[in-house]
Amino acid sequence: MALKGEMHMSLENQQQPFFKSYNIDEGEFNEAGLVWSEVIQIYQDFLEFIPTLKAATSPLLSILQSHPDVHSVRTRVKDPEHLVEKIIRKTISKKKLNRDYKITVGNYRTEVTDLLGIRVLHLYKDQAIHIDEKIRDTWNLHERAKIYFRKGDYNDAEIRKYSEHFDFEEHPAGYRSWHYLIESQITKEMTIAEIQVRTIFEEGWSEVDHQLRYPYDLENELLTKQLMVLNRLAGNADEMVNSIRETKTNLHDLLEERRKQEGIIHDLSNELKELKNELEEVYHKKEIQEEDLNSLRKKIKSLEDSQKKLTYYDFSLAGKGADGGTLPVVEGGDYVNTVKEVEKIQLTSDQLKLHNPLLRGLDTTKQ
Image (tube, rainbow, N blue to C red; front, top):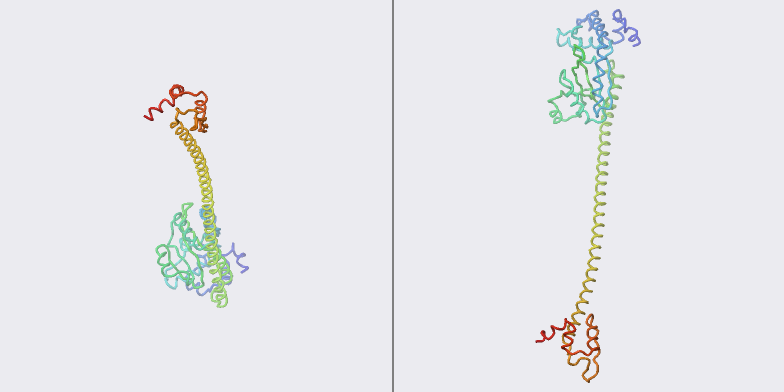
């Protein structure tokens, strides 16, 4: 592997070291009709194309990072040697199905669709669909998006639900990711970029799997089993994260509901206090009114009693009792002074009428 860095700028004369370093079978290379000099032409063209790809990266990253559900974005331009390796392996594979298949310097930019790769990472699994909406609203898709999933991730109903917009592919190693090929153009030439959307835990597993197993230990049964266990743990971690978030959301909702109820109770308590104060004030006013009413009733009764006594007073016996003695004066409110005055000056009935206008109507009443 040490030869990779050394041969980077002098790959033209390094065919055999390259085959050895990347474990490529020379017989399969020749059988697929590949020519090393043509592969080198693609390699050199790509070296010149790299600055354009890097320039296209910045606006893509800015747009994706602006989405609130995106945790982080990683990008990379394909390593030139890895491009050569991929062209060789893809041609060998495709030739078995189509003998006319060929990758050239004129078509490699569309045949190899991950020259510019972007990984969009998010925390929670349900955020992927929101990021999907952002991607579709912003760019044209070069082809239908694809969801790679592990067996058991989706049921038939879920696959039918999303099949209008996605192709589903069950990955034998448990790889999970949503893949998009978007078309971007900052120069006259259209650039195809591959966007991979997945959770942080899915990214962690993918990095470990890629480093330890791909591409030379794909058939290592022990590594495959261990990485499948790690894959299940990553999936369980995603489920646990969603469960923790749901718990927190429910607790927040409960606390918010409790605060609302406490606020309602506080408001009701204040209203009850106000009503109690108003009721006490009404009772107080009522007591005052009853006292005033009783006082008025007493005054009216006193006046009525005094008037009654004066109305039936026999002035022919003024100042005399039955035995000829002096009559006692009866206390009778405002009329007492009038009675005392009558006794004092010994007025006759006719004189009293002239003296007190109130009594002038008494005879008329009796008649």
